[in-house]
Image (cartoon, rainbow, N blue to C red; front, side):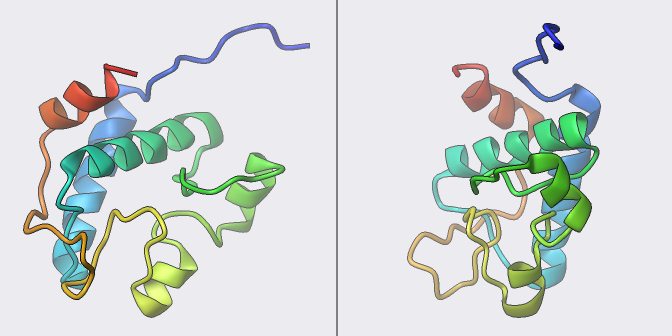
Length: 120
């Protein structure tokens, strides 16, 4: 039995990678982050944590019976199939302009992410 505790937060390397990916993907797809950037911060942190733990940015907003199997299947790895095919982001990370929660930002700083996620 593995009794070693995993860190509760994502590594700086994965967090920066997921932040950069999210900004680039939003710009490339014409989507925007949520008007409440704390939502964006938590989702990016969750993606980075999954990247650390599973080797893939599995969607952090869904429940999985077996995270490792889901990460290997890639369907829910960000950007997930619903996002790639229909611009439907369950996490509210990438929002289209007709979404009532859409903001006007396509960038977020590491400081903004940590300000939110360090409170957890």
